[in-house]
Picture 1 (cartoon, helix red, strand yellow):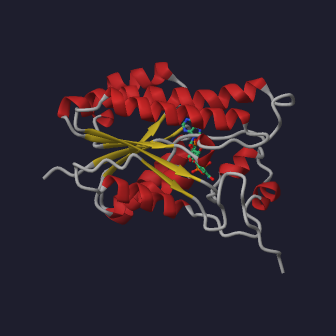
Picture 2 (cartoon, helix red, strand yellow):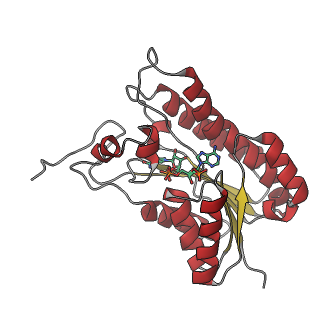
Length: 255
Ligand SMILES: NC(=O)c1ccc[n+]([C@@H]2O[C@H](COP(=O)([O-])OP(=O)(O)OC[C@H]3O[C@@H](n4cnc5c(N)ncnc54)[C@H](OP(=O)(O)O)[C@@H]3O)[C@@H](O)[C@H]2O)c1
């Protein structure tokens, strides 16, 4: 029997890397993507060596529609997968709108929204042809609430929620499943990127609480995908026990 294949965008760290490792450990072939050739090649090599699965690195920026189209033309089989995890994404800064940098807004919106659309468009027709497949969108609690300094990131994740819900309707009846995994605070490289490399500032985000780990997210994705074909998990919102909403975080005093 041919093995299952999952394509995960942004698999060099965080959610994407943990998900690639978990699915490979379950015997799935993986297509892992990143903007960085060296890093994603190392991830693919690790997965092949550890789990004996086929792991293919694919280098592209999810914002680059032209490149996605040319890869699709040259390597069509890599876009013919059982599961797509639309994971690549980021936040940049926590400035208010009046102080924010419009060029950074372009990066966030183009990556989180347009990138997700482009990759979905490249993969979905194959799933529809087979009448089987699963698109897992990585949303966020920032797609359910807003917070000060989060206008652009929250807007991008609210857009992911809207795309997710409309996509479910677009393909309803096809047999293809669509799910959204919407997390609160998870300690990954996310905050380091958001604070433009300032690791001290990034650490403070998780101070005094136990955040989720990227393995918790991989676990939720695995559970979602491994339900029987007649079960479509619409959306999972998961937060640390110490977090009750995007703004309500319980922090314990540090010793
Ligand atoms: N961490 C959290 O608290 C949290 C909570 C809710 C939702 N999320 C969402 O979860 C997803 C993953 O975040 P994470 O926490 O795992 O962050 P992370 O550790 O920084 O990982 C982000 C991944 O996205 C890739 N990426 C970023 N921009 C890209 C682009 N333009 N094209 C291709 N790949 C790109 C990066 O790959 P390269 O740099 O190698 O290209 C990296 O592998 C994001 O959508 C984020 O919004 C995170």
